[in-house]
Each structure stands twice: as C-alpha cells, then as structure tokens.
Image 1 (tube, helix red, strand yellow):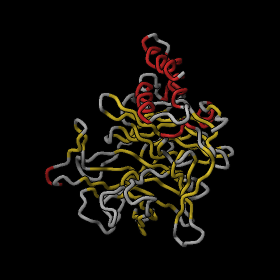
Image 2 (tube, helix red, strand yellow):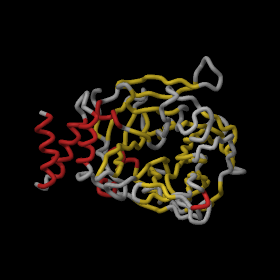
Image 3 (cartoon, one colour):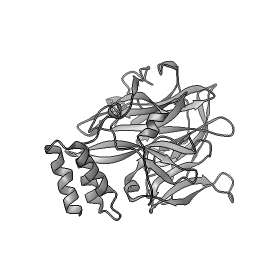
Length: 356
C-alpha cells in the first residue's frame, strides 16, 4: 500500500490531480511507525500541493511595520495575545540576515547574534498603535547568541508572562532552554526571568505553547505517542513537570509549536508547523489543530502555507479579536505579519480525528 501511495503522491502533481496528491501524502503521514526519512520525503513532496491560507479562508493580511530595535535590524516572529481587550504583541528584532543559508551579522558584532524585543499594541485594523523596546537583563555567558528568542505571551495570575528561548545561560551554554518571566506593561520590562531545566541536559527546548485559561504549556502535540503538557509541580513550589495526556494520532508525530492554545468552543485551537526540505532548504507548513477539554487532538485542518509557499513562515501567536482569530507569523527571519480569519472559518477547515 505504501508504494502505491508514494506513486500517487509523486505523479498526481504532473497529472494535475492536486487534491488526490495531497490526500496521498496525508495518508502516508498517518501510517503508524512511519520511517523518519519516509516522513520527511513525503512532507517535502507535499510542498507542491500545499495551498496558501487565503485559498482556504477569507484572510486579511497586515505587515507589522514599526521601527526595529536598531537601525538595520530585522523584524520577525511576532507573538500575540488579547489582554483586557488590547491586542498586544512582542516582535523579535535581530542583527542578522540569512544569506545562502548562513547567518550574517554586522562586522562590529564580531559574529554574535543579538536579539531584542519590541512591545507593540495593535488597533482594530491590525495597524501598530504604539511600540516600545522591552528591557530584560539576565546573567549571560560568552556564548555568542544573546537575548530572548521567539517569545510567547501568556496570562498569569498577576498579569502577563513571557516564555522564550535563551542560549547563553549557565550551565546549559549553547543549548536552547525555555526561560519564563513577568512582563511589566508600564515599564516594558521582563522581570523575574527563570531558566527551566529540560528533560535531558543535551536536548534543545523550544517553542512551548501556552495554554490559555488553564496555565502551563503544551510541550508536544505528540511525544512518545501522546500529547504532553508542562504543568505546575504540586510538590515543588515554582517547579514544573511533564504530564503525559491523551494518545496522539500518528500524523501528529512531527507537529511543532506553534501559537498558544486559544480557548474556542469546548476546547482550544492552535497553529502548529511541520518541517520539510526543498533543494537543501528548510520549509515550513502549518495546520490549525483543535484540542478537546481533555487536551486530546480532536480536529486537524489541511496543511497550508500562510502567504508564501515553499519557504520558512513561523507562527508564534494567535489571539481572538471579536469573531476573528488573528495569527502572528514571521517570514524568513526577515518580516513580521498578522493575518486574521473568522473563527467559524477556522472550525470549517477542521476534519475530525476519530482515533490515535
């Protein structure tokens, strides 16, 4: 059966049978125990069938155009949240550009990647209303990657919190670790930054997805065949623990974060990404994913690109604005964008997941 599906996945493109080719790819990726190299090859083939979001739904796009942290720096990978009726974002600004797959920094930075973040408030038309640089000091090592990378925003008992990736912290020098802190909206300052241990000192920890209205994060849509969350440890003040939850379908095996999980209907909605490769370049595709009240994956959208096919687009936030969902994303580590669709359209795109 696999060989027949692989033949369809390849040849349907040339026959103009786009829907059939996409379905063949999806059926392959839903096979339990699929070899990783077969999965990667299938996702790379699927790139040629993947629609953009505006082909699936009525989508409104708005580029985030604010002054970067420093002259010549980029804007990308914005986080997003609806806080007390205000649409707030954290926009990443960095000193590098990507040229032929290489990170290129200004000569004066001597090979060091630097990131600062901007606190941006958006109006109902998704245009920026205000912009402030966020202050954040933490003890740093000499590892040449500075700053909070790819922030996520979350509600806390005291206001707003931030989770982000840091790399230049001891004793995990160079390893990606999740750091959490509080965001003071009055001073635009992250305080109380705490770096969390990972499950393995050698593993990178990135892109945990905050769970709106519940606390904690989604660690993985599928880890060891189950949905796994990061929850407060009841036996250790300020501590966290990984909790294995519902069985996950095989197709979720390579789902990665991702926006936060936003409350919707009787559960949550989120956006995840999957990694493919094309001519040696990484490319990302996305899906809307529904989780039920038990954090079981209950619905999946078709894979989609957001604005540009066969490139890196990276979603870091989603927030409700009236009857619409606003999704924040970066493009090629060089652009920051928002796109909105109706919540009804989001649910219309989902197909039920009946079993793991």
